[in-house]
Length: 238
Figure 1 (cartoon, rainbow, N blue to C red):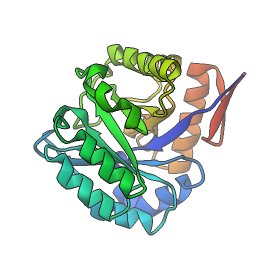
Figure 2 (cartoon, rainbow, N blue to C red):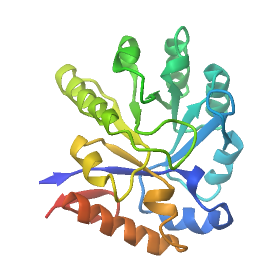
Figure 3 (cartoon, rainbow, N blue to C red):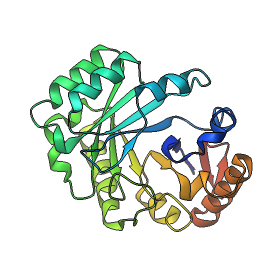
């Protein structure tokens, strides 16, 4: 049995003093880069920006996925369209009344649209437009800061999203975001998302070397899940 997975390192958690070194190493190993856009209002943190996306573009052709944690989602959607961010994911909690227009604008620009579900947010919130989405991101920790408590109950949404997709023929990918590490690889793998967002506890903070950290992440993944890793593109059962 072969299980295809995709990896999306969270660049908010990387070592910025090793920015070019780490991106260059990861470019041929990962499927996308996860870029958190926080405005200090939706969550009490401020991170990354469309300008950051332009800097990554200078050294990488890997698709870039923006995860917005902002109150004025349409404003940021316009900024991210301008810098040609490949995937633009808005917080479902502030999308009422603007979700369809944001999705239409993103698709009209030839880009992919996604919605994010925070831990307390039901899948019902996005059902009116779920058939239009290219991706649904399930937060497995509270949004805003890395290193928060893993919320196992959120994995039920991943299972339900997969069921809905299979039953109704939807085209979205399912992404999980939060505390992807040694302690939770098995739980996450059992829920079976398509895309794993990996951050400081699962990759960047394991050692001082991105090469050694990658090797350690692979060992931990294999140890916990029983799957063998092949260059970050897919895993095969032992």
